[in-house]
Length: 496
Image (cartoon, rainbow, N blue to C red):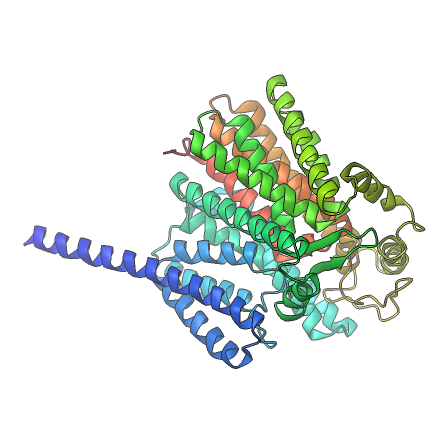
């Protein structure tokens, strides 16, 4: 009788496993349908599709929280800046996904079906709990007393809620095998995003797709965030908000190739292809911050590589540079060498770039003045300056590109210092593993270097962008902490 019962339980478990996979496939189909609906302006199906997608995700999360986490991570990488990819203004489907995960996780915690010991074990738990709960509540209330618009307060608070994702990750995915799957999903999603952006860019180059239609699609309909169009030197630009993941991804891919020796030829070739797509997507972005971030992160990476791997990194960079030169000479009749260094040079010349640099200088004046008036506790989430203007454009008075000044304005020197100490703690944890964990496997070393290099690039890019206050930057910070904790607690990740 016991064998019959065990057999029935196994069949039931297998059935739910396959059902979960079917639900994931249905969600992928929903995402594809959303893209088609935005392309062809099928507005009538948006709300029903949103409701259906939420129901399917809820059912999936109830059955398999791990699968739901993978879906949320993929949506973050591929879904753009806003989460309003369904064009429904009164909610963010990304926040609804996160809320569903939290509710089901809390229910299982109360039913004692989830082990909380990893949370108690991690030294990052208390600081992250403060970021996820205290920061949104306290500085949300300060913003409310200052009279900032509610939607702006919620936008800032929503980003910080993603710090709470750490607690779900560390308890639902506590094993090395779980970490391996999560990293794989993360990197596959980044490679897919880079591939899509690269293909669309060349579609625009060959006039298969109109660059202005892509701007309307990504920025006007799907709220991706970014800048798309034709630059004064006639080069095309395709920069979307999720491009920061592409920057992070190329560094993780490079670390895997340079540090992890036991890679099959197929895997190595796929990673090299992903690096190529990431590089082309970064070139297509025409974004100086991305390039500076990669240069800074590559210098960080060089310190931890043996001389042979350093040579390979430099050789790879030169190869990618030559490929870019061939593309620009062939399609735009421009020298990528001149284009690259001239674009970097405009970072310090208002005359060469009056819009971007002029706008940021005006932000320094406005944000700096606010910090001097409220230095310690800031002026709260949702800070809004109606007098903020650029030289040639009227900028969004809410979205600030100078990330560190933006953070200091909103939660003051005290809040910024607390956040900064957590970032320093991440590097201290990672460097301790690299320097003092003598049995550290090559695969683990590659992951640590990749995720820390990605964090370096994020911190550099965050100086001139709002990524550090958004779900994008916060997600990578959380994933870095998660990977470091898993590696420090367990034996090496098994590989196939």
